[in-house]
Image 1 (tube, rainbow, N blue to C red):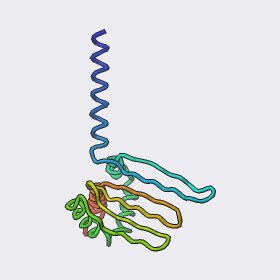
Image 2 (cartoon, helix red, strand yellow):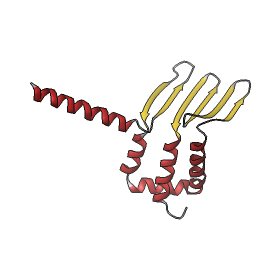
Image 3 (tube, one colour):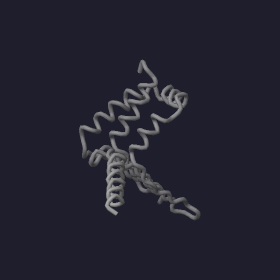
Image 4 (cartoon, rainbow, N blue to C red):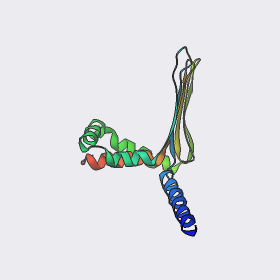
Length: 145
């Protein structure tokens, strides 16, 4: 009975550590609501660690293609990601007109993009660290940037 309790405690401890590691970078959140007949409603949260792991597991030719297509933007992405981490709470863009609204801000180290257009709503939240990880990985695949 004691061995079973120790095994259960070990499994619970491993599960807790695994969960802490998976969520240590935060989560990526995407919410899309189309407010019309047969409109889509998509809501999902993904641990940001999945992006880093996916970049290491992706086939090399796919990363090389992505790096070559984004080569000219990689230095800008790297600098923006670096600057976003310096300002954990900042308003970047807030544009409104009669039917549309776009709001981009950094809060708590996450980049939040909120867009409303004709009743359609899109919310995206990405940790700034993930943007930096993606830029670093693509630069490693596309040297000379």
